[in-house]
Figure 1 (cartoon, rainbow, N blue to C red):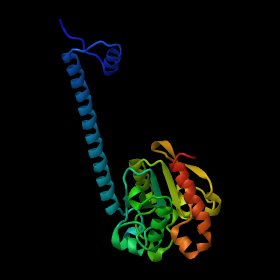
Figure 2: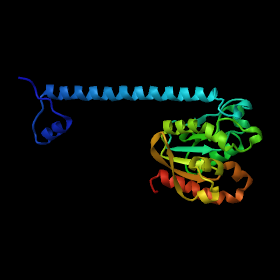
Figure 3: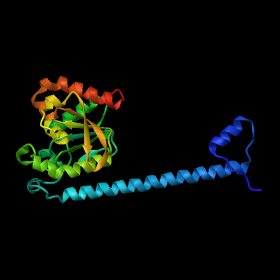
Length: 241
């Protein structure tokens, strides 16, 4: 006579009613649970490997990119940095001289201020993912043109799709206008939660716009408004929005 294999829920119910389980029954259920756990682990490993491969392919494409004229003056490309499964993804304008030298985003004076801004809401750079609308430094640190940002948009969209953050933050008017495809100024865009969408990705993401740290260095009188934006970001991540 074959032994009955009980599910975990059935085992709990039988124990609650005072019925003992045969050793073989519990063992069979344990084997099934172990097999399911092993399958979940294997699937997670495969997904992790696929993610790593996708990041490697993206990095290689960006390094070799010649889609616009910015490639001619760069020392190296600046893809992004930070937690690749972050809840918060920040998008700035473009790499500067120090970023071009180090190959990392926001490592100059503006980057130092960004680090302090994140600390205000109890976050570190390692907790977030940071990138820019374009991956090469524009000459003389000028603003990237719409053509240059459109050339880099597929890279940015792939970054967002890979990270899958809960919230996007546009740092400055250039990034906000590019992401939201609008001509409204940063003063009009900040203070609200917008919706960002990718054509090739079915989901939409909430987006908050705030001042670029470089702007705050030049115009510290706007730090009060920036603090309000940071509080809004923290409230959203804490589930208050």
